Image (tube, rainbow, N blue to C red; front, side, top):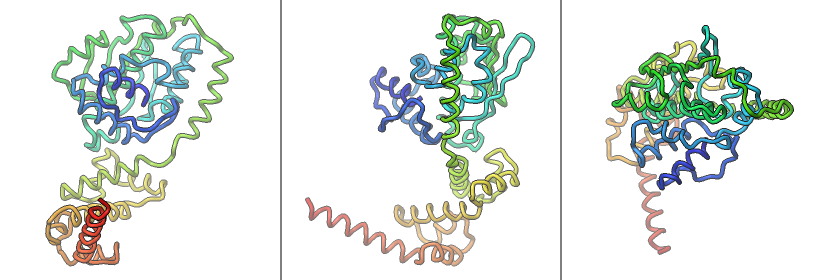
Length: 337
């Protein structure tokens, strides 16, 4: 996916956000992916950006999942593979596939970032990009350009110009749905592909198993909880119940998930407050009592006591020491010049 983003930037002659070299099957954390999307969007701010990027996708951008699809006799055979291994190329939300009469429906829930109110624009672009890639790859593998989707339901907000999406997917498109659902005719998916390779299929599946097991277990969820806590602190309501609502899960579920990741809400709340406190002390002229209020403390003394436990210094001492440190650094830099 990083390769596709870099390719798009080169074609459009805009600055690429891809600074490192990635292997085709490398995973990056979702928030890092969204930040790269943001960089592109800031330079190429057009409605339907995800659709535009997907126009340039090819098998090499997807990696092993695309090669497995190529080795299958039909895309109908590939469906259970897609359901299991799709996170290798797009580790987003779990895909659900079921049959309804003469249609196959591929669906997934809204992403956690979106439901938490974070990375809204970037998540919308990422969502439409994922759907458009599925559309483009089916078209490329089967050599068809019409009637690929029978209907499309998107969880993104209704755009200013819905016709962009209807013309692109050439089917009815509905927005503001509770989840994204792609409707495809079983006749399309049953079409025999010109090329398939059973031997290659089994070799690739074994490699896919290895990649699936090696997907980083470091939790984007914990990062998301931290981001949600920071947001809730800024909004003046840093309570676990509010964080759970941001994430669209119950308070008990939030606590249980954090427990499985060796984390606790109170520890993450403390880390977030320390982060913001240091940021305010170092980068602003806000008074100690103003910072205490911003961090959700009713009294300055409570904040001062907590900050000293965290850092071993009072907020005033910490600020003064870091101002001095900054001045020394600037003086040394001047001497070096």
